Structure formats: structure tokens, C-alpha cells
Length: 146
Image 1 (cartoon, helix red, strand yellow):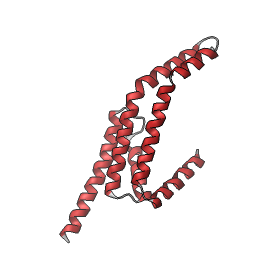
Image 2 (cartoon, rainbow, N blue to C red; image 1 turned 30 degrees about the vertical axis):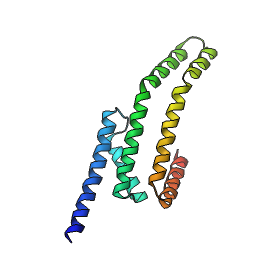
Image 3 (tube, rainbow, N blue to C red; image 1 turned 60 degrees about the vertical axis):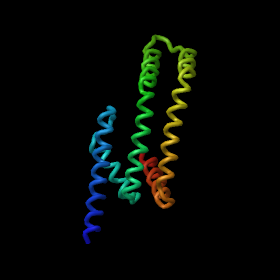
């Protein structure tokens, strides 16, 4: 009986810590999402996919690592957006300048895509086949809402 209660307390504490750490990571990195929204997403993943405590920890680590890598690209992405904005604010559109700018930033776009692909792959490794099928359904349903 004591072990059962102890396990429940540990699992509850871990879940709470994951939600709180996700919120603090989002706030530290200047993320757009409010803490409530992040908490809601994590709860939905935990409930719909029936993630174990170990899986929850692994998912949190994967997300944190991915965000840190993307954060490193943020200054380059911001500079690119500012340059595009300048091109858009010009009196005449310079197609060649836009092509050159886009071409010059291909390494950044590729790096971001690689980070996202690696994170998705890592997530796939954490989930069971049943959970993967459920996640696929959730993504499909979400895509249709957009």
C-alpha cells in the first residue's frame, strides 16, 4: 500500500514539474504561447496519448533541446525577416535581390528543418506504435481545422 501511494505521489510530482518547467522554458525564451496554452497542450498529449511518466520526461527533454537549437538560429532568422521587410517597403520590388537574399539564407532554413526533423524523429522513438497512430489522428484532425 505504501509503495502504491509513494508511486502516485512521485508520478504526480513529476507531471507537475514537467508542466511547470515547460511553462518556464517558454517564458524564458520569449515564446508567444501563454503558460495556460502550453499547459493545455501538455495535458492533451498526456491524456490523449496516455504517456507514461518516463515518456513525459523524455518528451520534455526533446522539446527543450529542440527549442534551444532553434533559439540559436533566432538572430539569423530575425535578420532575414528584417531584410525581407526592407525589400517589401521599397518603392519597387527587386526580384533578384529577394532571390539572392533567400539563396544566401538556405543554410539557416536547412538547419531549422533539420532540427525539426530530428525532434520529430526522437519523439517517434519515444512513443509506442499505438501512441504514434493516435498522434497521427490528432495531427490530421488539427490540419483539417486550419
